[in-house]
Structure formats: C-alpha cells, structure tokens
Image (cartoon, rainbow over all chains, first blue to last red):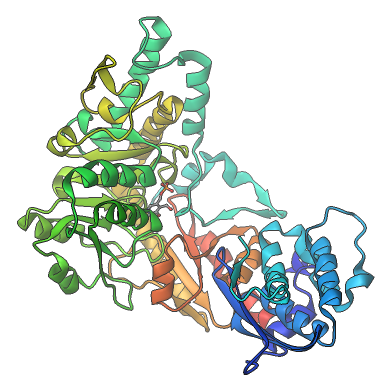
Length: 150
Length: 407
Ligand SMILES: Cc1ncc(COP(=O)(O)O)c(C=O)c1O
C-alpha cells in the first residue's frame, strides 16, 4: 500500500525506530546538548563522552518521528570511536546527501547512513533527519545550549 | 446520510479532481485552509477582467463599479453574521490582524497596568501572543482559564477568573486543535454581567455554523476569508459600533482620513477609520461570492451534514486500536485530532500523503494545548462540506495500514 514510500521508510528505519540504539543517559557526560525542531515539536538530548578529541560514547534521549529517531540512533552508533574532525566530516557528507542538489550522491561515503538518503525527496522531512546532526555539531563545538533546526 | 447535495458541491471545487501521488485527493486539512469553489475563482477573474479599479477614490466608471462591488461584499458579510450595520464590518487581513487590531487599538486605549485579560487554555497562538504583547506594553496581566481532559473549558474556573480587574475576555468560538465549541453565549452573558466586553475568535466556527453576532451579543468577532472558501489575505473584524467609534485608529494612511493638514488629521468615519490603504479589493469581492455560494446551500444544512461526518469519523476512529482522539468535547465541530500509539504524527502525515490524503501533523499553532495533553503534536483530519463518508473510509483504511506497517 505504501510502495511510494519505500525509499523513505526503509526497513532499517523501522528497526531503529522500534529499537533505538544507545537510548540511555550518560551520567556526567562530557557534552550534553538539546536539539529541538519547533516544526514538529521533536526534542532530543544528546550525550557525548570524550577522550581528548575522540568520541568514546554517544547516547540520546527524547522522542520524535521515525526518521528523526532512526537518524539519531544511527548517528550515535556511527560516531562512536571517531575524532571530532571525522564526525564533522561525516556531518558534512550527511548534509550533502540529505539536502544536496547533486544527482550523484556519494552513498559509499556515509555508510549505513545511506538509508536516510530518501528524505531528499521529502523537503518537509529533511529537518527530521538532520536534527540529530545539528545537535551533534553543537555538542562538538561545545555549545552547551539548546539548538533548534529553525 | 441526509440528502445533502455533496456530489454537486464537489463538482464546484476544481481542485478536488486533482490526483496526488497518482491517487484521488482526499483533502482533510480544511481547518488550516479550505479549497475554493469555481464561483469564487470566477469572481476574481471577472473583477480583474471587467470591473477593477481602486475603491473610494475616483469618479470614473470603473472606480464606481469596483467600489459598488466592494461595498456590496461588506453588506453580504454584514447579513451573513447578522451585524446591525455595515459600519461594524471592518476588512482586515485575517483573524490574526483582527485580534491584533483590537489589542492595539481597544486594548491600548482601555487597558492599563494591573488590569486583566482573560483567555482560555485552548487558544490559537493568534489569540495569545497579541495579548502578551499588550501586557508587555501596558503592565496588564494575561489570565488563562483551564480546560479538562475532554478538551472542554472548565466553566466554573472561567467564571472565577472573571474578576473586578478583568477588562476584556477573548475566547475561541471553536478550537482548531480540538474541535471544541465553547459555550460562548453563556461566557458573554457572564462577562457582560460584569460589564466586560468579549471578543470571539471565529476563525474555525465561521465555516461550520450559523453565526449571529447580535444573538451572541459579542463585542468583537474575528474570522478569516480563507477558511470560509474565500481567498487568503482577507478577513473580517466585526465590532459593536459604539466600541469602534470610541477606539483610536490602528494604522494611519490613505482612506482612513477625512481631512489632513500637517497640523492635524481628522479621521474618517467607520468602517474606513480602520481600513488604511488600498484594501484587498478582489479578495473582498470574492469573499462576497463565497458567502453567496454558502447561502445558496444553507449554513444550517452544512452544519447538519458536517455533524454526520464527524460522528461517522469518530465512530470509525474509536474502533482503531492504539488511536487516541485528542479533543472529545460534548459540543464539537468537524475536527478529528488524534495520536497513534508509538507512531509520530509526522510519520502519519507523510504516510497518508502517499495515499493522496492531506491531513495536518503538528502543533496546530496551539503549543499550550499540546503541552496540556502531553503530546508533541497530533495528526488532524478536519472536514468541510465537500468531504464524504467514502473519504473517511479511505482515511481510516490508511490509518489501519500504516499501523500495520509500523508494526
Ligand atoms: C482558531 C484560530 N484562530 C486564529 C487563526 C488564525 O487565522 P489566520 O492565520 O487566518 O489569521 C486560526 C487559523 O489557523 C485558527 O484556527
């Protein structure tokens, strides 16, 4: 019935929505930033544990739509063990993938995150996918405040 | 169903024949804005093709024609809401501007530090923020009457909040987030017993029921054309003549003056005192066309048909496991706001869109209502006179299927 939506709602997304990974609080986290999407009321709190400039642990709390939940869940998995620079690079590639105008998108470069490429076709939903990453960006820049997609 | 001519009405709305993602459009976002009948579209084309010029300005033929049509629409609005006089009908951009006008004109002139303005917990942001701004400007205090879990105003609490300091009550006639129809006549009588004027936000009520401002005895009534099958960018503020006469102008400019020198300006008479600048001429004229169209069908018939639609939709929705209706007031208009267990409204919105069904997913400009029900957002199906039982079946089947997909 929802054939048209197969690119947007891939099975991996349903899976992460049902069972979000790293859905927990990190007590005394080195970084803790809140992300807010005023358009849909989604809120998430991102926790990072750092060792120098390396992310050793990442987790989140909060609730959102399937796209935003899957996006943050996947993100916390993928950034673990990465340096700040590597995570920032990934953010840029992710951003290009979800908002870029290029016909050619480099899905290889983003690995597992490629399942979220479908949001490109749904402008109203791009922010759902990027909220997690904007929050991460703020956390890496050590902005200890709430960020908003607007 | 009653013998309401829904198929004939549908044929009058060209957009209803659109295909969305290769499926017939099922338009259930009428509370956000509703679609336009051919008669309204034609009235705009006709005006620009034959009768257009600026109003109230020229002696030339077109200006006279244009002015006649424009003022004719004012009379239609007056009759539609049974106002006492055309002077009481002020054309504005929409409900939002009407409320801002009252806040900045009536409010600033009559409300001072320590005074209270009373609203309810189910207001649209446009009936919250203008009062907050006024409170900041004047030192007045905004009071909020609470609602219960059905989404109804707790009337006893409202009455208690009507104090010696209350200078104005502003209440939504029908809530856009919940569908609740407030007991406005009782509210108005209670406020008037204490000499407190009452403004009604009629943005949602106006397309769904007969509104008689004299019978209600409200002091101000605001609504938007675009929710009444007319274009966006046009709306109406009704105000009782005596109140409007005493109020200072809202904006200055052309049309609202009688005589200008650099020393002083004499303001124009009502309603022009509040209509500075060239108005939305075609939109006003087509609002008149929308009213003609509705009168030909009959607001009472529309209300009865929509009540059947809402009953049908509510009954079907209640059979869906995991669906919770937000807004179960006893007295309710044709709005079905709901949430699904573990499925975010935005996912509902996207999934239904892929089936050609347009619903709203979000906070509906009523964030305090969302907070009260402890949901970030809801999905909302809002019905108009051109919707059918079959469309409700399509919606309900869509909801059931997406629940399955999310598993
Ligand atoms: C209850 C209510 N009040 C006010 C408004 C604001 O109307 P407008 O945006 O047309 O000014 C709306 C529209 O969404 C509404 O539903």
